[in-house]
Image: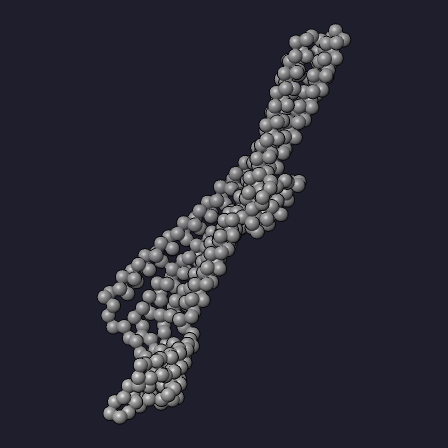
Length: 393
């Protein structure tokens, strides 16, 4: 099962999309960071006029000229860009949290699919054993009929039961194939996946410890906490919308040929102060919007934690009842097999009828299938309990 989960986390399209969302968030982080680090640029100009421009006997613009300029721009003080940089970093963590929660969802679904294949195989085995028993009974009924100790009706009844059991085997084999195909799709494979043996699941911790683990470590809780932290940071940084900024620039140039207004080489430096004074109450409205989003994130987190704790209580109760039901159905299956054995012996000794044997066979088959279904329910409940307390995957 763990290998199937590993394949799902490598090839499931939903999880791959979530991983790409992390890469996208990291790209947005780099874009936001670019506004806070120096930039360097260069321009070149080649110009040709029909004739030089002359004013008062001096050439103000030659007929042919080349101008090369290099500019270094340094954001010295830019609180708004710094806030965007910080918020973009928080958004990366939000994307990671969402991806981890998607990972958990895919892993749990794959685990359930694996257990479903296993359960269908166990039901198939039970139906095959029932078919083999019915076949043996048919052989016995035929032998008794040939020897004159039984009737044709007994043989026909045994044949009817065998045919019904063979049909159940075919149905169970089809169910196994369908379950294996579903597992292969979840794991992102082009073919069906088979199962190899019953999985070993971790022990479920006491409910007090489980509640604590779910409230702190579950991926959906962690993702909700990251979204709340991001919403709080964005709201906190709203003031930067009206914060002044200072930008420095340094420029060097080369002019050939020089003109009256521009030497051949030179440089210039400048500081630019940008101070927003009034933005039409845009920042006020933005702050209200972000405050509402932060409030929504708080409510969402409380709801996720509440749901996580509820999941723990519900899955623990379901697991307890599933284990109790499994013990009872296994005992029922054991007694049904014993009854079948006793009825078969009595039939061979002439102390019971063919109908009693057929009824005992059907009861034994149904009890064995019920035990396999109960075992699957117990495994599924254990997987849900482990997922609820963040111990699977």
